[in-house]
Amino acid sequence: MLRFLRRFTLRTRLLASMAVLTAALLGLGAWGVVENRIVTQRTAALFDSAQQGSDAVSRLRESLANLRRLQADAIASGANPVEVERIVALWKAEAERVKQLDADLARIDAGNTTIEALVKQQLGQLQQYTEIVGPLLDKLQSAVLDSAGALAYAEAAEEHVTALRTTADAMLKASQSRQATIREELADAATLAANLRLALTVLAVVVLLPALWLTLRSVCEPLQAAVAAADRIARGDLGEDLATEGRDETATLLRSLQQMQLALRRLVGQVRESAESIQTASGEVAAGNADLSQRTEEQASNLQQTASSMEMLTDSVRHNADSAQRANELASDAAGAAAQGGKVVGHAVTTMHDIAASSQKIAEIISVIDGIAFQTNILALNAAVEAARAGEQGRGFAVVAGEVRSLAQRSAEAAREIKTLITASVERVEAGTRQVSDAGQAMQEIVGKVERVSQLIHDISGATTAQSRDIGQVGDAVGQLDRVTQQNAALVEQSAAAAESLRAQASRLAEVVGVFRV
Image 1: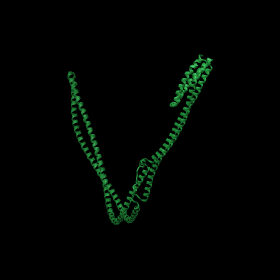
Image 2 (image 1 turned 135 degrees about the vertical axis):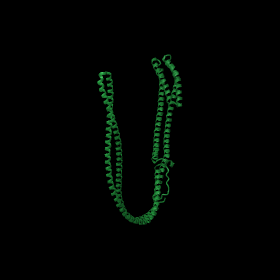
Image 3 (image 1 turned 90 degrees about the vertical axis):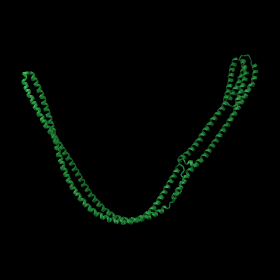
Image 4 (image 1 turned 120 degrees about the vertical axis):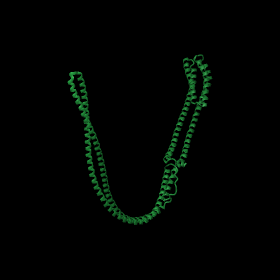
């Protein structure tokens, strides 16, 4: 049961306990209120029913008395038909009232066999009574019977009136007996309700006390276990494991203590191993410091020799840097001259291109002139044909046309000769242009190579300068390293003393950690 309870949190268990207690109290209170209300309603209903029955019996006795009185009044008023008629109407109404009261009693006391039997008996008696008195009153109303004759009927009806009254008295006694029974039943019901409330209260206490005891036990036992575990850890006992069942806050606390114990156990083991390792290592460090001191002195001697060699190397590199700087200046001058030659060749190439373009334009003009001469020759030929058609009149025009044709032919021949010369000149100009272009490209390649050589020499000069600077820094570093080596020699002696002190502290730490039992 405790394991089951510890599956829930303390908050849940406490809230559940309070909820159950509250629910029990509310249930008892609500049941008491409902039971009181039921008893009150039942009491009111029973008393109301009993009161109605008593009232009905009282009215019934009154009505029976009225029937007997009206019967006597009718016999006494036999000489007055009007009065008899009025009394007969009242008697009949009273008889109907008796029947209605009997019906009310049967309804009010439904289920009461005594009352039902008495009501049935009284209705039979009322029927017998009305069968005797009814004809009597009719005869009195019709004046068939006088008062003296009516007295004989009245004596016969008196027996039934007595029976009706006896039955009414029995009804009254039955109603009173029923009221007494109701009071006894209500007293029994109240006693039963009180006993039930007491029994439920005892049952709630019997159920809640063990539940509260289990709840307190489920809380106190884990807390006691946690206190005991904390005491053991405080004494240095880390060997005993903790039981961490459940999922409540106390189980979480125990798990945390368990984790802390495991962590301390691992920590103590690690510290113990570390102390032993430090104790062993400190002895080795002390032994190694002596060798380190000797090697440090040898290293200092070697560093002094290295510093002398670095000074000589620095002078050599500085001389190389000066030579590289002069070579860089010469390469820069050569690159400038090559660049200037490249510009001149470029101008020549441009001029040759311009000449080639002009020669091409002249060739085009000559072609135009040749075309004009050809057209002129055709026009002169056409003019000669027209002059021949004109006959004698066109002879002079034919002579002129012949001269023009001859001139056009000579112009065409001259144009062809000029075109031939121009074409040859253009071809030579183009050949020269190509040669100049090739020379320009070769000059540009020379300029590029000279610039690359200049850049390489510049890079060499920069690298040599940087090497000279770096070697100087290396020399400074070697000097600094020499000084540091001297300082290290002193530190080695201090380290030996510190290693011995560390060994002593490690021994003390091992003794302290030995207090814990894992």
